[in-house]
Amino acid sequence: MKRLSLVLPALLLASVSHAATVAQVKAKGVLVLGTDPTFAPFEFKGPDGQIQGFDIDIARAVAKDLGVKLEIRPVGFGALMPQSVTSGRVDMAMSGITITPERAKVVAFSGPYYRSAQVFIVRGGNPGKFTWPSDVKGKTLGVQANTTGQYTANGMLKPKGAVLKVYDDFAAGLADVRAGRITALIGDAPTVADLGKRLPGQFAQAGQPLAAEDYGMVFAKGSDLAAAANRTLARLKASGEYQKLLNTWIVQK
Image (tube, one colour):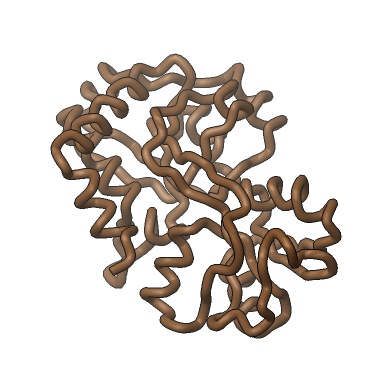
């Protein structure tokens, strides 16, 4: 996402990292996944209350290849990265987590499993005719707290005269977009496609993407689970299963 938690707490916690290993996971028979289930279509609660999504299906494939069950543990994003991983509360984390050099000092990432982009979400039809990069001066733009969108906006949009409004809750930002209280909200490109399916005509993407980013699966430093996840990812891509998952969850039909 989106998601970029503060670096300093991560560095402080690095010294107490508990690296779960493949052998330990196989011995207990369970791979514990930490995720913040508020980021459709990657992880969210379905009508039956069960957590589902693109990330969840990839994590299930990792668990299957290890010969264990997947246990899904909901964790708020502020506690998910990196605390839940470095403390050993979870064996892995997935929640649209962007790979960054700062985070890679604290946790281990799999290879990238999805290329995303930060985009501007506006009201359907873009009644304000907002565009990027030509039209940000004096505009009020929403960002979600502690996300890559916020940090990118601070570096690229504030210097151009944009006014940033920070939200703890992404849904609150969407509500302000819909009500016309802000010009646009910065979010991930797949989110726009998902909104188009769930709330047709209410939201749209405006202008060019703000920045590209890669998502990765997250593990404790030194864990061989990262290599196991990479093997699963390679298998999914070679077999065509990865594309099927993309078609199921992300590709707009």
